[in-house]
Length: 109
Image (cartoon, rainbow, N blue to C red; front, side, top):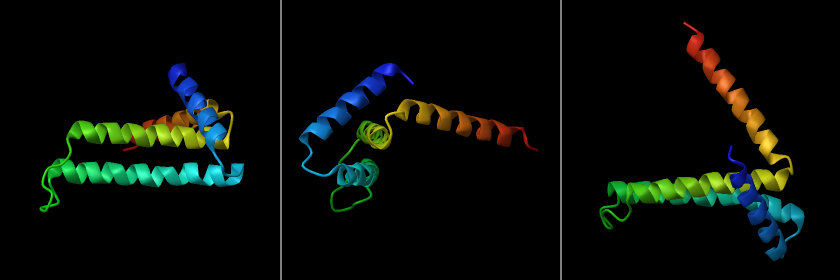
């Protein structure tokens, strides 16, 4: 993963830490819960992009969905970095695990 992404994550975590009135434990929990909020925004954007709410019609674009998905990813990285200062390694190790698992399942008949 591009090191600039982790630099951005580190800056965001530092800023959030400085501004937070919560204890470290409460802050950790709220950053994990933030993911639920962001996923809900993805859902709302998909519903809006497909016009599934007849009362509202089409309220979003697929570009809005893309942006909301990015917010989910970024929020997840912030939450991971909040849990461990070694977030980049944890992420890289997990990505390798998922890639290996995927490759193994593609080889099976």
